[in-house]
Length: 130
Image 1 (cartoon, rainbow, N blue to C red):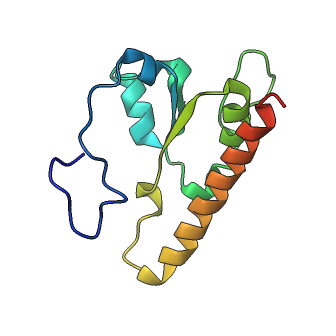
Image 2: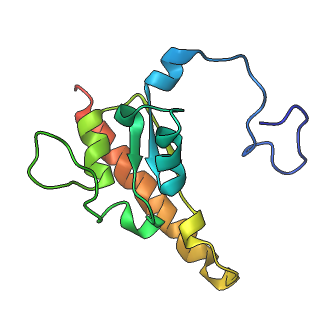
């Protein structure tokens, strides 16, 4: 967050707010790569809140079967895991495994992020009561 607005970035930098409390965090699932796994390893979040996979790039979120649930024989994709968990909110923490100095790939990475967010949103909307 920032205490002072940053010109040109007001819509992407979070303003300082009051602490939302533990309930806010308990209703949140963190989806990502090794940085997300690290949060759980250091006790910052619980395993019930973590959908993390070391080495995951944005391209693997929709297709990589890497999340295990006791009730399933095989792992599921992160999108399927979000659908099964039905969290109130998802914090997606991905990107470092897709970073390169090649700026021509920026649009491809942005497109992938948009597709992932759309798939997660659709999977959550399907779970909502009608």
